[in-house]
Structures are given as structure tokens and as C-alpha cells.
Length: 281
Image 1 (cartoon, one colour):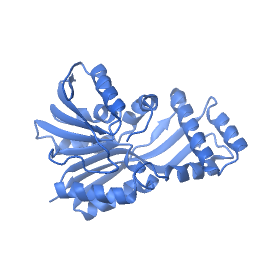
Image 2 (cartoon, one colour):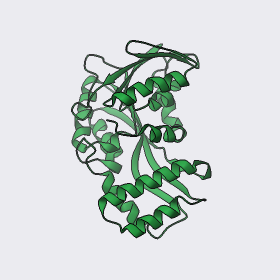
Image 3 (cartoon, one colour):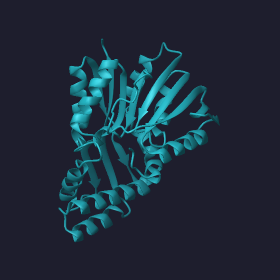
Image 4 (cartoon, rainbow, N blue to C red):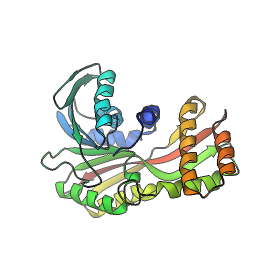
């Protein structure tokens, strides 16, 4: 994991950060308000975007463990964090950085999350977090993850979980069949078993509530307009490529839809959900 191209991760980062629900982020901040430091484990960390989107809500001293199966992305995450920080220096395990008065000690952990959804054994972080990950995993994987999380009584914050809603404007005759085919592709095995897709957030919330967590969810949609033309074009191309693989939509319809979706004036709302879960016992 992660399997995503660095260019795609870079392209979406600003939109991801804007889309986060600010209310849940404030509640996360309040949970750790009396702490001088915090240990955070970020699952499927990619280029470290989740760190950059979350750090301002956390205490002044932060110890991050970035977990990903892709060593190239982990190395690139260190570079991205160093470029973003006010100051940074490499360490044997990752990078140390200062940003907006906060001290960030970042370590890298290569780990196969498909085989083991709980890479915190022996490390006991204060917070487990992830971004745009849980819609890719299977329902049994979610059950294993929640069981391990609850056993360790760890706080959990995840953002930008796909919720199965997308609205393109202006409307196109092939929108309905394209959306249905894309969602069927989304639910294919991404290495964790058949993906939970748009059901992921509710599956996690229900499992966590049964395990004694206080769970809050909030909508965090991408709102893509004229200034997001590059991201809209990349998203539309990704949809077209995925739909082709399903064989459910004629090629002529895919081409016509893609041409319309990469034209000037297109807007798009992509639904996501954020979730904060705090243990009660």
C-alpha cells in the first residue's frame, strides 16, 4: 500500500485539506489540549499529506510514524515534509522538522497493512489516523482493525473516506451508467479483499460504537470548480480508465463522457466522510 502515483497525491493535497470537516478537527484538538506531546501513527501515509493536514490541531511536540508499504513514497514523504517545514534535518529513522512553532519527529515504517492492520505493536501511539484509505479495504479487514484498535484503546481519526456520491455539472446522458460502473470497479479487491467502498465509513462507525467508542462523523466533500480544472481532468480520466476495465459502458459513450468532463466549465462534487472515534473505557 499505497499504490497511488505521487503526481496524483500532490494534485489532490490542497483540495483534501480544504475539504476536511473543521468541526471534527477542532474536537480532535480539544481531546489532546492538555497534552504537551502526542504520538501519532498514520496508516497508508503516502507522501505525508495527512500529517500536513492534521499537525496544526495537535500539541507542540509531535512524534509521527508514517506507515506505508511503498518505500519510494515513504522516502518522498520525508522530502515533502522537509520542503514544507520551516526548518528540517534528516535523521536515521526519517526527518525532524519545525513548522509554525511545532516540533515534528517523523519516523518511517514500511509495513504490509493488508497482512496486519495493526502495526502499532510495542509502540502504543496516542492516535491512529489515515486519509483516503478505508474505502479501499474490505469489511473483514475493518473488523480486524477495529478489534485491534479497541483492544489497545487508541483514539482514531480518519478523513476523506469515499461515500459513494459524486455530482458532475453540467449533466451528461452517460452520468448514471458511468457512476454505476465506476462504483462497481471501486469495490473490486485493492489488495485487502473486496473493497468496502462507499459503505466503509458506516461499517467503521458501527464496529467502533459496538466496541465502546464515542464516534462522530461529518461530511467532507471535494467542491471542485473552475480553478480545479487539472484535478477535474485527472479525476475524469481515472473514472474513464476504471469504467473501461469493467466493460459495462460502450467505448463510444466513455469517450464522449470524458470529452465533456474535460471541457471548460465543468464542476464536480465528490462526497467523502471524516470520522473521529474516542474510547470510553
